[in-house]
Image (cartoon, rainbow, N blue to C red; front, side):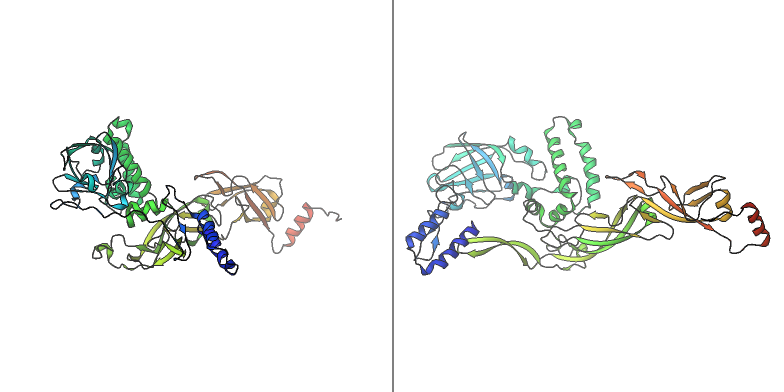
Length: 501
């Protein structure tokens, strides 16, 4: 819509000299944008001569107030009511919003923005509802209260009923729980680390270990139809899904579930990947290896903006600017989402991190090992990946060909080249490779002997290897630098003169 609108405005400017009638232009714009949004109240009306265009005015209501002596606050012990939906008097569903707005399908209460209907609650568990000015104050109370300290208190909500009276005439009231409709409220209450029995900030390996242990304990095969156990099993699965993902874990540690949900919607930009060229000897590409590498990177000091005096916050300083999505006005009434750098309130520091590189047997030069979310951290961004690129270093004895074959050379004395030999040579990992020429088989200078299955391992997807390439050994025959008279006579007798062609 924004692009189309800008094109229309441009056309209007171009054709100003023609000066078409205002009614004509207004008709075009209203056909393009009038009535958008449905319901007859969400569109723009374009009018000239009075400041461009405007939105039709909605009826104005004066926000309702609670009577004197009735609290307008929601006591923290009643936070469990926030974001809940109830069936009211077996009639219709009503909602208790987290901001204290009460929503019901009546004339005064169906528009939350009008603030004509509100709710509050005191420490004794009494709930007050201002149902607009006509119906006035309603008072209800829960038949019992859930334990807010219990992570699974929401399981108790379906068993709670509300009852009371309307203040003006004593009409009886009752309500039955339907659902928690506000997922943001549910998310705000979640403690993913607590779900797994861990302290905040536990690392990914600890998270996975705790999940394996608890998933066995609460698996439906063991707990049957126990609803509490089923809820627990679901919660630990959700916690593991987020905390075992480095990018989601980082965002959760920074901004809770709100940041994770924003990432899932694509509202959070991703940081740049970090790249490291890592030299690996051919020997380790043959045998495989576990390499421990220490890197220094910028990390966000989680929790240090609120509590900078914590022990873990020592050495934490200012973070780089954050990148956030903001609305920018590009024309009257038209906005676009753009990235913008804003000063960060978080704290950062450089920190050493140890990583384990798994060099698999048969890895190729240029192959990559990726550590997800381990690039430098920056507030307001999903950390990029840290990518190690394998750089195969040269070996003094062996060279690699076609990915899986090896070539080398060995020196053979002239006598063995003529009479045959049975010798061995050390491979990359030290095991001995047998080289054989049977008596009567003459080894020619620079002859290449193929040893099947003694090349590089074939790496297969998912780890491991299935086969090996071949080893090619070039025979460098060592000739004597000089011969004695006796040696010349012996050779002359053994090898009669041959005609050359």
